[in-house]
Length: 294
Length: 306
Image (cartoon, rainbow over all chains, first blue to last red; front, side, top):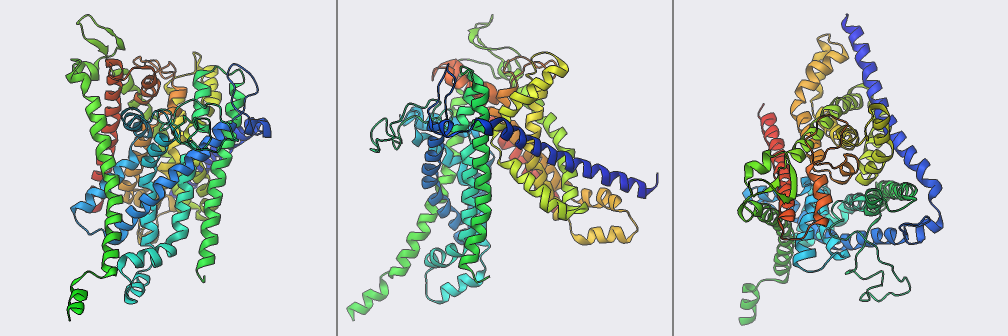
């Protein structure tokens, strides 16, 4: 066979492979949306789940997911910001930095179920917090930190060194240069990373089933006292999230309309994650346009 | 005089702020390192208790093929052979990597060499979206599409290694692909130009030059995908059937380390052997993730030396 013919065949094969991958995604999305979207209604999004009965919703789970996400971000964003600043501005090239980078790499590649079990052991059992939003948020923080840190570091490193020199030559200390010049300049990149991380957290379940718990006690949405047990704001209550709910519905099977509920919940989850993705792109570009003259 | 002297000798406000800032950022980074150390310490110390406290032999744990932690065997020791799960984990990991690698390389070559325009407009977003889909959703799709499909084609329950492989294949595909793209992109342009100038066709250039030059990067991508597949818990747990038996074929229920772990931790009491032995499974997961990390490092070092 001539080399030209082989070249043609190979090109066709590569086109086919790419088409198959696009097809896989298309059918995945189509399946989820076709199965799930008809099931989504205002009632489904707001009413509590029911077991052994048809017609339950995902209201509490949806709220829990969002609330857990916010709490996790409140804990993990400052830490990763500090860590990222250290790595990009202060870290010297020595073995300590090597150890730090290696640990971040290891943490990011740990299976989420191991991180979840660690959270279970430390927070739920030893610290006595029980299954709670706080335990879940702390476990998710561990899961989220390496990615956020790396993102902050990369965004800061992308800022041109002349900006730092300008800050220093004005008599600012290094810390002031970082917080007042470099971080604002790197903000679009950092925000994009945070939103993408939010999408990942929103869909995470394995780290949560043994930290935030698998049940969603009834909430009283008129009670906004964060210390009351039925208040949605209480961070010491159990909170089953949307992703955990899908898992539980499918593995326990005590819901007669489990397939529909999980299809609807999956659709909501996918739509949320897609929104996070689009939002991340949009906001990054928008802010960059606004704060630079480009 | 005294005033000026003290002003000169005292730390300025700025210097204090600088020290404070540096200390703060150091605190944050040490927190992360501390967390990693704590995870290793706690999981390891829990994971080795069955061997020291309950008298389980390491060899019977790693190579025993019967898993029934609540019962005691004929030798008076608990029956905790973890081989079924270890084998299950390795088999699904390898199979999904074997299936995913050609697809990933094909797609990456397409994106970088054949049609960068289509690649950027169509494949790139597709791959980013695939990364974003939560693992429980993959599990749910596996449960409602792949398991029935396997059942109708091969008979049996449909749960098993085959269904697990399919789900993991789709899950690791985007990771492996995007890392392979990076590897191909880092091959210098003049390699391709030199090859084309010698009269090689595009495919010859890709196959004999670009792919060879990118081998370390592609290997890293595959190992990374395997690490993800090995640690994936819920999606695989939903489709594999969770029977702690040595897998005999691809369509009978099997189990992985992660699936037994997620099923078991909630049903056992802290401090008992049934619970401790699960932590030993978690320890294996931890060590394997460390192992994959080391392999990636070694590949990186070897690739960099050339």
